[in-house]
Structure formats: structure tokens, C-alpha cells
Amino acid sequence: MSKKSKFHNSPFCYLGQALFSLIAPWRQIDWLLLFLVVGLTGFGGLTIYSIERVEELNHAYQHLSIGCLGLGIAIAISRLNYRSLLQWYWLIYVLTNISLVAVMVAGVTAKGAQRWISVAGFNVQPSEFAKIGLVITLAALLRHKKRPNFLNLLRTLAITAIPWALVFLQPDLGTSLVFGVIVIAMLYWAKVNPGWLILIVSPVVSAILYHLHLPGWLFWILAITGVAWLTIPVKIVGALSAIVINCGAVELGNVFWSLLKDYQKARIILFLDPEKDPLGGGYHLIQSRIAIGSGKFWGTGLYQGTQTQLNFIPEQHTDFIFSAVGEEWGFVGSILLLVVFWLICWRLVWVANQATDNFGSLLAIGFLAIIAFQVITNISMTIGLAPITGIPLPFMSYGRSALLSNFIGIAIVESVANYREIKNNMF
Image 1 (tube, rainbow, N blue to C red):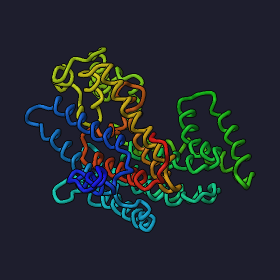
Image 2 (image 1 turned 45 degrees about the vertical axis):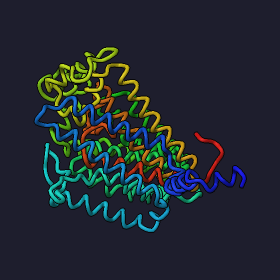
Image 3 (image 1 turned 180 degrees about the vertical axis):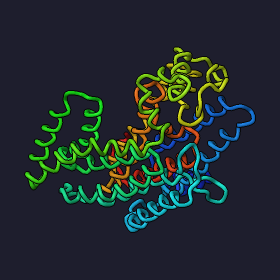
Image 4 (image 1 turned 180 degrees about the horizontal axis):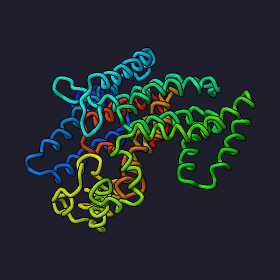
């Protein structure tokens, strides 16, 4: 008997074949992406543990427990074919809106907002899972290879408007901003006319320019009118509509402002000069800056941060967890954290480019928009570059619904990677 035959008949060969058959259903998933997400979740749990008082250690344990549950869900979902979602996307959309309505009717109020609903003794935040429902719905609608026309654009905006309005009225300003970023990113990836994307964001820019009394407001209106004339099929109607909508955005901005809670208004106003109310609306940002600055280059060390250990920073285990990272791990740790987030975003773009169809590609881009926007906004608000909007840092901040929804999003992306066509390049 030859050596080759002996090898094929050996126990090691059978063991190898058994192991290969065991992992075969997951052989094409993006292991690097999964490793980064799991590592980030573990680091988040460690950070929460380091800043909690002894009597509150359940936050860290719950974070890690939900992370383990999320990992199991990711492994299970990544084996399923993501294309099966095409049969259910309208049902997902309807259930998403029903859950948001249920919050308004029978939700639990906390911290000035009605965002949670009690399920089996746990407070669940449907708006976090609504992000996933919106991504799936828009990916299904925009999956056709043909560039979306103006009617497709209007349909997409109308479908987005319903869950967006329900979330905004909770009120949940941060998540409503995430919805806007999702639809713009997915429309861009679907190769919609760039001029139309400019028209979508133009009312927001108009309202900001007007209320800040900036001299460029009138020139902006004229420029947007020109964009509408050049890109909308019915030129006169499009140009007049652009003028009316952008001028109306000024008054609409006043309406939206009146709908915000007092604490939300304070956060938006005071981020530019928090010293105006150092013990009120500006307190969070001032303490966050002190914590990050005290970390210097190498950080104070685990359990050694004065701001975090003495609990000077409110919500430091949720929205302001980056302050703890900056103080305990310093500039080096903060940069390494940003590098990990950059790698996650890079892998999401890679999966989008490697996807077999537009549906899978759009799914990856939708979740990329969620992760990237939340990272940029959260870190910016902790250092004073953006208003405090209550957006958590993905996989780091404590929040059971947010962490679980993020893992479900990664699971769907891993399914896209798992069912892509095999190509020669590894990265």
C-alpha cells in the first residue's frame, strides 16, 4: 500500500474531513470582520467594568452576555442565504412600523423619552431594530440594476418617512438622523442622480444657514434652484418646488425645534460653548473633555481615571464611553480604537464590492452607514465637535437593544459574504 493510500485511510484524514465538513457552511464568511466585532465588544465590556461601581457591575456582565448571544445569532444567520429576505421585506417593514407605533401607545418612558417597550421583563428599544428593517426594505427596493428614476426616489423617501417620523416623535433625534444617513448612503450606492441627493439635504442646509444668519442663504437657494432645473424631469415644477421647500424649511425648522425636549435643545445649543451652563446642559461635554485630556498620551491606566472612577461623567457607560477610553487608555488607545472601527468599515465596503448581487451589496452599505455615522457622531460629541444626540458607540456602549441589533446587522453582512462568488483575492 502506498504512503498516499495510508494517509487517506488514517484517522487524521477522517478527522480533517470531519472538521472541514463542520466548518464548510461558514467557509466564506469574513472572519476578520467577525473577529474585530467580537474583540471590540469584549473591549467595551472591559471598559464598562473598569468604570462601574461594585454595586453596578451587572452592566458589564449584561454587555458581555448580549455580546455572546449576538455572536451566536451571527454564526447562525450567516449560514442562511440572505436572499430569502426578499420574500419577507414588506412584512419586515410593516412589523417595524407596528413596533414603533406600539412604543408610542404602550411604551416605557425614561430620561424624558418614550423609546422602550417592556417584553418579558426586559426593556426593548424598537428603534434600534427599525434600522435593520429599513436597510432590508430599501435594499430590496433599490436592488435592480437600472439606475433609480425620479419616481423611485420619491417612493424611497416616502417609505423612509413613516418610520422616521415615528422615531422622531418618541423623541429620538439621534436615531432619526441615522435613518437619514441610511437612505442617502443607499441611494448613492444605487447610483441615483447626485443632484437629487443634494436636493434631499438642501432643506436642512437652508434652515441652518437662515437661523445662523449667514449671508450665503440666498445664494444657496439660487444654487439649489439651478440644481433642480438641471436634474428634475419637469424643470419648471422642479425649480419652483425647490424654492418653496427650501424657503418652507425655515418655518419647518421652527416646528421641529418646538417638538424637541428642553434637554435636546440645550444639547444642540451648548455644544459650541458649554461654559454658558457648566452645571446644566454643558456639564456632560465639559467633564468629557477633562477626562479625555487627562489621559494624555498613554492614559492613566485601567481603574485609574479620576473622572471616570469618581463618576463625574454622566452616562459614561453608554453615550460617553469614549471619554473613559480617552482617560484610561490615552491618545494611543483612542487611535487604536479608531483604527479598529476603520477596519470594520473597510471590511463592510469589501463585502459590498464582493457581493454577488445588488441586494447583498446594498445591505452591506446600509449597515456601513449605520456603523460609520454612529462612530463619527458619538466621538465628535464627546470632544465637542458635534451636538450631544444620544447616539451610542457601536459595540462599545452599554445598551442591550443597540448591541443586539448591531450583531444582527453584522450577521446579515456575513451572510452576504458567505454566499458571494469565490474570487482569487483574499482581501
